[in-house]
Length: 390
Image 1 (cartoon, one colour):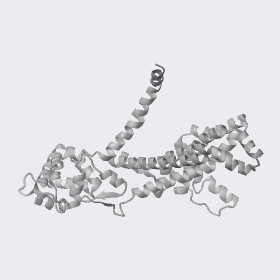
Image 2 (tube, rainbow, N blue to C red; image 1 turned 45 degrees about the vertical axis):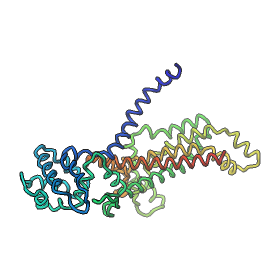
Image 3 (cartoon, rainbow, N blue to C red; image 1 turned 90 degrees about the horizontal axis):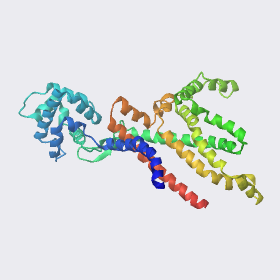
Image 4 (tube, one colour; image 1 turned 60 degrees about the vertical axis):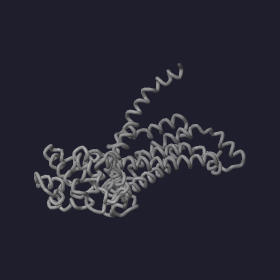
C-alpha cells in the first residue's frame, strides 16, 4: 500500500512528463519518416509508381496516365497545392511544374507520356520521378537524408548533396562548436564564482547568491537586447575600451560569433554555478586540512583533493549548459550574423515559415541523436574517471 500511495503521488508528474515531453519527441520522430501528403492527394500515381522497375528510364505509360488523372482530379478538388508543396521540397520549381501542367492538361490524350513531356520536359526527367517515388509514402528517407546533406538518386543510390545545396552538416557542426565553446567559457568563469560562494560566511554567501540569481528575474529577450546596446560600435563597452586606451577605434562585437559567445555565456553561466556550488558546499574543509597536515602544499591539496571532488558538479553543470546551448534560438538570432545561426534557427524556419514539418522533424531528430551519442561518450568518460579516482 505504501508503494501504491507513493506511485499515486508521482503519477500526475509522470503523466505530465509523458504528455509534454515523451509524446512530442515520439511525434517528431514519426514526422521525420512518415510521408503521406502526396499519396493523399495523388493516390493513383502513388499506387502505380511501384510498377516502375527499370530506374534507368522513365516509368511505363500507365504511371503517366495515373499522374494525369491525379493532377486533373486534385486541380478540380483544389488540393493540388499540397502535392505541389511536397514536390517543391525535392525538385527545383516543383510548384511551378505542377501548376503549369494542371493549367495546360487536356481532358483526354491517346499518349499521356508524350502529352505531359510536351507540356513540360521535366516530366521526362528521372529526378522528377525519383522525387515522386520518394514522396509516395507511407515511409520516406528523404527528410533524414536531406538533414545530413545526402540524397537518393533515381536508381536508389545514396549520394552527397551538391556543394551549393549542402548546408546542414555545417550548421550542425557550428551548433556543437558554439555550444562547446560556451560550455568551456562557463566552466572557466563559473568555477571561481562557485568556489567563492562556497567558502564565504553564510550571510555574505546569500548576498552573492542573490546576484547570481538576479538574471533569472529578467526576461531572456531583455537580457539579449541589453547586450545589443552594450556591444554595438557606439556602445558602452567600446567607449570604455577607447577611454582606457586598449583600442583606437570601435571594434565589431555584435552580429558576429563574438557577440554570440558573450551573450550566451552570460545567460547560461548561472546554470553552471548552481550545481557546482551545491557540490562544493558539501565538501568539508577538514579534507583540505588533512591533506596539508600530511605535507601537501595548498596548491597540491587543491589539485589532488579538492578539485577531483568537484568534478561531479562540473560535469552536471557543463552538461546542463551544453544541452541548453544546443537549442538556443533567440540569442544567436538577435546578436549573431548570418553565419552564426544554429540549427534551431532552421528548425524554426521550417516549422513556421515554410511549414515543412518533415524537414523540421528530421533536423530535430539528427540533433537529438547527436546529443544522445555525445551524452553516451560523456557518461563513459565520467565512469572511467570515477573508477580511476576510486
